[in-house]
Image (cartoon, rainbow, N blue to C red; front, side):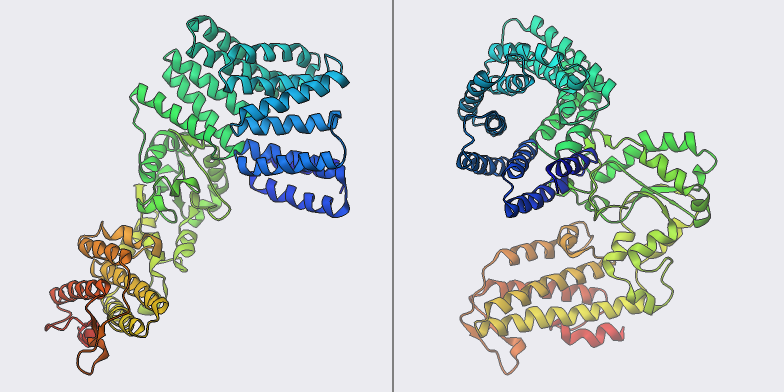
Length: 587
């Protein structure tokens, strides 16, 4: 493939905001170029990789390719040439972005020296040098030098006419950012703040006219937001920062620039006295009330009463378990609209289209959706929604149907909240599912967990440790922990979520929080394979005086046994749970 075709394909990925495909795309073509010995293509592709990693703030990768490409070009005897200077400029900018200012400045000066010996003074390539070099001075707080270089770049860019409009907007943005920072650190803040605002407005006009919304546009929006903060125009500042979040995320992802814009947005909300929902479910409810509901009433007034709306299904926020770690994907403002098959046939496509036009940013949260997380919010047929989670579109009718449904599927289908109900049948199914398992199946599941708990924790853990098989002993202990949690959910008549959320959810149950703490303690303890002592002829009676895990296992089983007795499902004093399976099933 010719290099022009490769670059055209790269442009398509950027235009489509398909940032996750960029790295493998470039790596694949770099491999082919190296195999074919195409030095020119190698240099071009590596330069693209350096720029991509720089913009994504993946500085280690960027520095690796900087070192590689300089060595490669020196080997090709290209030092001192304009192509070498072009690459050197890219390397300098990558170093500057990585905080290596001294190295960056040396590279910039070398580029300038090569340009002076080979280019006319008004060559457009000087504009790129001055723009990037200015950012290094700005990072070093030498704002006078930075602004001087940017002012030198302006007439060169203006000579390009319409072809240089985005470069002109970028230069205006850089000038605005420079004067904004300069105003914060100097005694002449008012004058420089005014200059920053003038440059920012010039950049904004160009970006709006051209419609090109790359990561430079995100930088401008952040500058505009900061200017509004300084003028105490907090609502307008929030609007700019919300747009900045979207532009930065779509073009760069969750970079430090994104996080900084998010912090400044929160400051704007704080200044306005606006509270930001801390949990995803609250965010979803508020987003529906403030953004979604008005749209639905305006565009679908005759159908609104037949829509059930809420947030239920896959995703940690539906369980209320979302945190800073989980919010890096498939999270953000959104909600579900459940309608009947007949209504879906009538308005489903239009309703989904209207939903997708809702803003994807709300109060600092942006809807981030991966390929795996598609289809969690939006418009759903009721039957299809339940079929996806349960495997069946309606309420289980027989014991066999109930038993066939995965428990985490039932947990997922009944979590979250309904914000607005309707008589379309969605909540009838939901309430029936929430009424829990049929009694016979509940007893059967309890009996099964009793067997697993005894076999894994009270029996096999000790035998494996007696043999010195620590690995299998830990497997047995993991099984014990998992089945203990399952029984705790069963005894609370609450569906257990997917395994990674089971322990976190135990603390919310009406009974079992003490066991949850003991399980955490158990998981943190080391095992001891020595000093196992047999008691009588039963291997189930083996104890290990040195293994604290064994003691905690017995303590947990005693608590479970006492709860079974309280429920009328066991009696006596024997806490070996498998011995009570007959009683559990008999009841």
